[in-house]
Length: 280
Ligand SMILES: O=C(O)CCC(=O)C(=O)O
Ligand SMILES: [Fe+2]
Image (cartoon, rainbow, N blue to C red; front, side, top):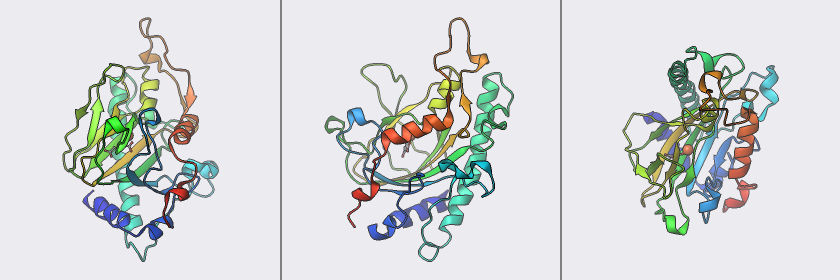
């Protein structure tokens, strides 16, 4: 994890012309500039004060899913410029995905399902497990002005493993429907993950597990974090589980495929033309 932070710092310290060479493509892979994403458009006056880098799964060329955007080729900075960068990121993504599977197993058991329920073919045997490096600017977030490190949102998939660099900023709201909302700081423990539950877990579990509303309020100091989003296979149909339906808790969400859900969320939150955000 230490090495991932080191390599992440190296990438974000590059001149913007270099970072622009890895600019995210239409498959959401690569560098995302400051303000590219707006996670809470209703309450933000401008985009999130963070830059990022998306790295996702790559299917073998002959696999049927290889033509799907979420399983396509990654974008990498040049090996000459950042030796070992790609290897560090690929290893971390693979290892963190295994941790994600372990947690998915515990969640399955708690819902009276078999431990490997989520990992079964068609669900998360080809998870859209996306690693995202994040770097927040030293700007101070001012909610009254609608400026945030990242706007309030819940993550979209099953769960997220979040590692932080020790700089405060992450906050959660335990009851997302309460007004006014109450925001609590999340302590950042070095070497530990913060685990956020995602919207697709909320849908699958018919609200028994609620997705975590969170945001980042930058404190006037740069901040680095590393997120690993564990999202189901593109084709996976996410529908309320039998074990989570009762007379008191009828199905609350219509079925939706993971891919459809993810595509609509990416569309809602990312700018149309990231190149326009770069001063090159
Ligand atoms: O940087 C963080 O601590 C949170 C990032 C986050 O919530 C996200 O990218 O979805
Ligand atoms: Fe998030």
